[in-house]
Length: 183
Image (cartoon, rainbow, N blue to C red):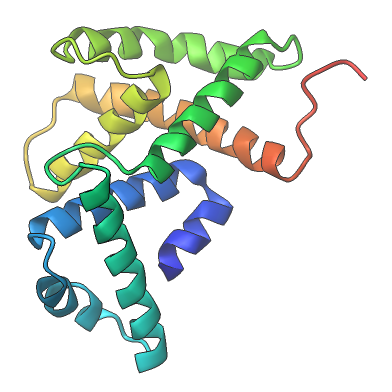
């Protein structure tokens, strides 16, 4: 919860990656608060008051996942809404003549997005979600100690650069600092 709050403020893409990890942690702990308590919350070096807040946060997320039917896979609506907002911003950035660097970065990333979407088994995800899913999958492979090809590493570097730029634009937009139209 503390980490999520910080990440949401600083980097929306890192926040989403973190939240997806939390969703998977809840799944790995079989939607049982006793397991989440023992395997996750107990490891936090925090006061009991802070642990109580974290516990409540996990309980709320667990309930959202149950009620929204994403117990086996998928993401809660809060996280989907961020993807929608990022996609909307992405489209606005692409239309803006002021965003030449963003456009160039996107078009440099586009071949990787096309490859990923071709491998998606017919799942039609928004481009931004495709990118975030690729980074998340890469992180999981690294954590599992699996071998990763040079081509995949190169693709993830480019996708990560693109997402970092989008996250920066998102933060500027949220702070009212992004000007896409001519004044």
